[in-house]
Image 1 (spheres, rainbow, N blue to C red):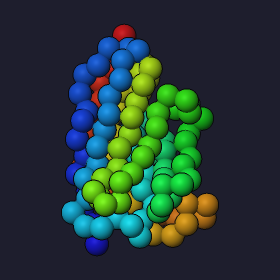
Image 2: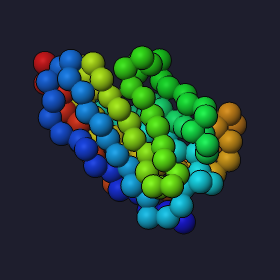
Image 3: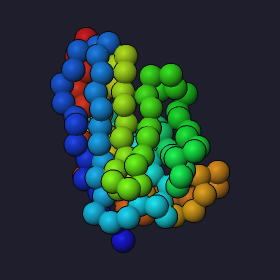
Length: 121
């Protein structure tokens, strides 16, 4: 079992950048890690995921080229670098962990509490 804690959210102007961190209480080497977001009145959506080794990443189309997910298994930490932020990126961002292969579907088992990102236009 692993506990996840996000940090790094805040208020930023459109066009700006933020870097979110997700610190795990235990080892994350066995987990695919993902970043989700949920905007008011909308469903939660997976925006980025990274494989166990970090060698494979996937992104939602609307963040490709702007967001980068990365991980350091030695530090049990995952990051989401967000550049060229838009007002529509405003949401609560959460990290999550699941077992399995990034190329196979699966449900995320462990979740952080989320961090608010607000982008002003």
